[in-house]
Image 1 (cartoon, rainbow, N blue to C red):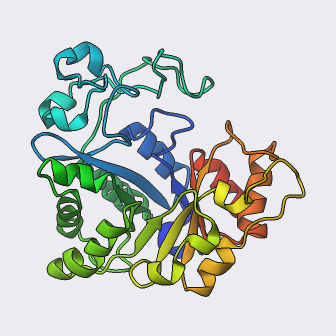
Image 2 (cartoon, rainbow, N blue to C red):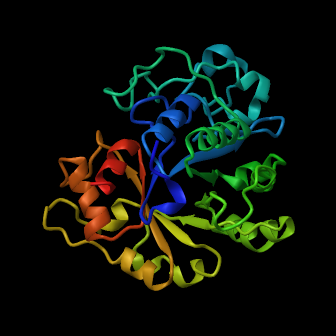
Length: 313
């Protein structure tokens, strides 16, 4: 790799769960591929095991991405789910991770990596950090981390402090300041404010924060309040289109403009070549809309190579 990525580029590409358009999400293979494809940041959704270990998985439960029902049928809860928090790390790492499927075993994205093919495992947050730092060392890259605090209230109810554990790990690995290569995100505003005003000062950290949002009208976002503790907002594609996205001439919302007026960068989720919103029929048309027409500052992409290629045209 000759390009120094990450902090150096003005508009960023965040590999959404890795190169998840090509390999099972959040596996180390998917993260290595995303790195090689030129992503600026690799995303980590963080949850915790029964013994308090940070692992990189999108959901609180494992049914859609692993063989947990076959391996550990006795931990199934009344709702039919098998939760990460009911397994120790040692047990979790024995699972076979696979492409995401629905309740009937049908792939969510039929043309992606075939479910139950090859062999993949889950990984810890520490393992992923060490992979990323090793690749930064061997390639001269500047690729960053973009961890998400998943369902903090759920973890608190189970006696676990996910945010504190995450920040402790980041500090150990040298992610301490604004330019150290880590951005922390969460949908939970209360927990993100706790990170900003309590947990980071206690640890001498000053990391940029992203408040994730979904479904709200721009006037209801409370951007002035968000700007008091966060540096960025993460918005869904739907929040860019307004209430009617059935026409090519649909007028975009002013959410990006409003955010920029409050000093907030905007990172939009999720760009998928195989799940394009109406009226787009090509991923580059969507790229053009979000980057050029809307002026977003970054995208979460399942296909980071294609998003990078668009920006590097």
